[in-house]
Image (cartoon, rainbow, N blue to C red; front, side):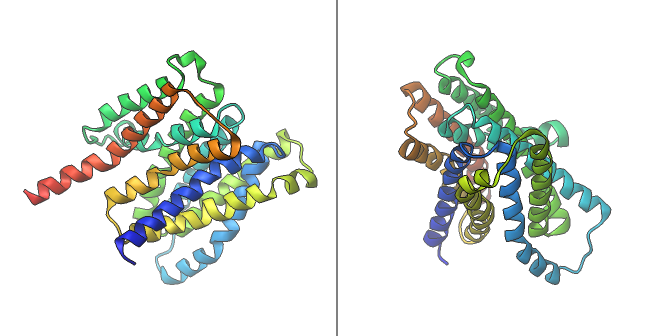
Length: 296
């Protein structure tokens, strides 16, 4: 695979994730958010299990009790992110959700500062200010105009950042990305279904009414897209991968406009652009600085 093909693979992954926002939003016309999350990640767990078995055959080092605890905590973080994003979509738009969720790119290094005592690249601080400014513009110039769903999506981005940090640590320790994926999917499915059984009504008609969205997000967003990401990143540079994967927010907004008729004012578009620039800056600037220092 050459670099152009790899970048197209990453673009496809981003498009699948962008479509996932539309599927998540429309599914709740027929089913509750926790039933949707539970069934979605149950499907994702089943999809990834055969690949976990293949991975286990190639890996001889057994998992420790600490590894299993880390896997479980990663799953809890994923559940937190999935729950706040899904509930947030009840009162925010697909466009807002897709861009605000992308703030996890800025939050990951901030978590490293607070909890891991790691000094981040200097670009984090201006990027964080840009991201906050983007949310302000997205609200139309007044934070009071942000919905509960918008604030929940900010919390969702924090959970995603925690999940990414924990998953990265687990992969480095165990070298088992597929096992981590299966465990976090299973934990999220069980946690969501436990809440759903208590808090939300369900019927066969509800499941049938949202089955297409459940299968799309479970198979494609959670299964295929992550596989495409791993494949594509093997054959392209980190900066290019960041650019193509960050287009998830653009696909989400575009599909929200095309399929759901969502619109926003000029300030909203300016806010989206500012958040998108902040996301790219966090990914690209450190890599460019590193390459310049190596070349020098």
